[in-house]
Image (tube, rainbow over all chains, first blue to last red; front, side, top):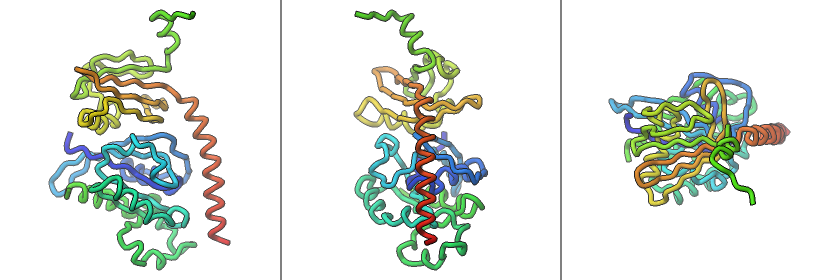
Length: 163
Length: 128
């Protein structure tokens, strides 16, 4: 198996972690929200710059803060994707605190910050709000429409390979 | 005093507990096949991708036991929720699956209801 890398998706419930994984691994999407309990693990082989990588993607139950996640799920992680929902401020109001927690507890593990549900920009969500410095390192995705989902995983994979 | 012999234990744990042993390369050495069909000589990574990262992690650390609650396993369209324990023995790795599907489904239903209400409240607050 080529270079297995463990990726864990983090973030509040209902932000779209499972949908992002389903879109990336199976190219599918469902509007129905079904809560994740425990952990689902999926595998996807990708190729970046001639390197074949096996991504082992852990979809864990949503938590309002990372310190509530089960420690065994996070052990041995090569990269994190932290997901928030652009239409629910509660899911990104503690973003800085969450990033600090990851830096303190998972030094040298790269993180990709993803603002999901970008298909809602213009509806009731101002795109301008997310163009500020606070969100300059975020990738905005839509699991529903497939926008930037592959990019988010590939960007994280490049960061993991660079270490 | 109640004593259980091996036969009683097999009856008690039927459909609840599945035990697999693998070598340090993940090759299946034994399986009691109570919950799933796992072929001897196959690689445990092919059975479930959780082992792709868990077994190397276990082999690289001092701690000899790792536990993962609530693992979703789908085989032949049947979904099962298990708490799994992986233990490093001297010459092999022992993997125990405890079937808690009913409990996790109950938890899922309760959490679903709670989360949907909270999401609706958050989106409602935003609009007002």
